[in-house]
Image (tube, rainbow, N blue to C red; front, side, top):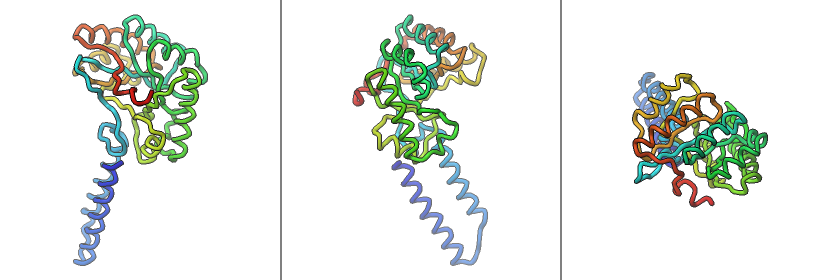
Length: 256
């Protein structure tokens, strides 16, 4: 949170200085106060909803690659219907991925989680409940959700990579403190498929392919009906352009 702390202290000092000047001169410029509050709110919003900004924590949102490699990631599973289809596609096309799984779903579908790991993919942490209000949780609550999920994953796969992706990509000081205390790597993305909000398969595919480049981390969801068919076409098209789909050691090496 170094970036956030620096801004917080700088902003606080600047705000105090502005108030002191107004008090000394006897003039109150309300628009200056509104402007400064607006700057603060914009900064906090960018930090909360844009992981790549790195305001509250450092996350990996792209990978180093010298051979046109890209990283496939799937959120919100495992799903008893969709996840096996995705695994079939990945196995058939010899591609690897990271699955950011929700803890209570891990416990409901241990056989799918075992298959994910057994087929050479990584099972990672996506909180226990994926609550819409996760961003408002205390540090201790966040730690418990991460720890409970990791325990469920480890019980099945016998391995912990300590990789975490916050729900909706939201970050804040509490999430930063929790992941730092537990020594987790936070994984983001820089290419979002929008497979959860669009039912236009070709539109989603074109969006992903449009600016695809080496080192991209691509966000899919293994809970959406159209995702398996999009995935197969995407991998085939990208392979024709020379792209590969492996999990680079920079992601997991230090956490084995």
